[in-house]
Image (cartoon, rainbow, N blue to C red; front, side):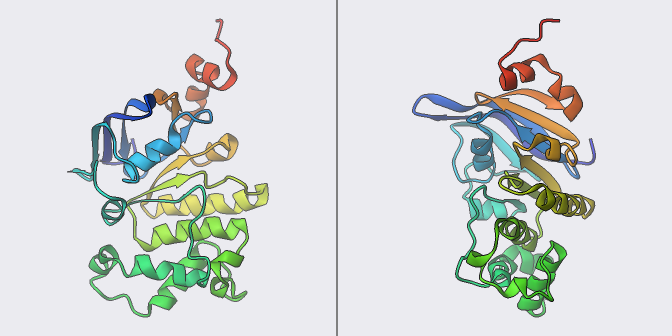
Length: 252
């Protein structure tokens, strides 16, 4: 493990209409890790992200972040503790310039506390964050309305809004979805830089080849249960994982 344990999930259950979306899921997350969450469609991956970030409440189980219970807290209180997320369907302020989308998180109590109130000009700080994550300042892309941006920039904007909150953990929900190979290639160094800057990443992803370039550990969810957890190469050789993805038994 890379560092201290910062997230503990114990026996997490959630059902919808009698169907178990998560069935007793337990795992730990350590500082500095990049962990992939994979599994077939409908396996419960996004439900798990929603549980961790407060968008839905668990029926049972415990979520402890930085030594504090957070299960049952609303999303904004969890985010202010440093556990933030992107969305599979992006949710920017469409009519506002891209850089203005960062003003809300930059005005949050978390950021003001960590920076002791010395933020300087918020517009400049917002543009600096966007430039760091791939927006070209000279091309005036940060000043374009969020609704006019192509998919690749919207994905970056999602990450930028997370970074503006000075997170401890970022949960990325399908950050590669819909992106071209060149867009993904340019995104990978950004994710690696986030890890180098001390941010821990959990990534729900279907683009496995690209995910395995950054994730040192993979957790597999199927029918709401965790069926494997470990290094990508070992996990993908697990008979239960092969069956989940390909519907075949390992007959060795």
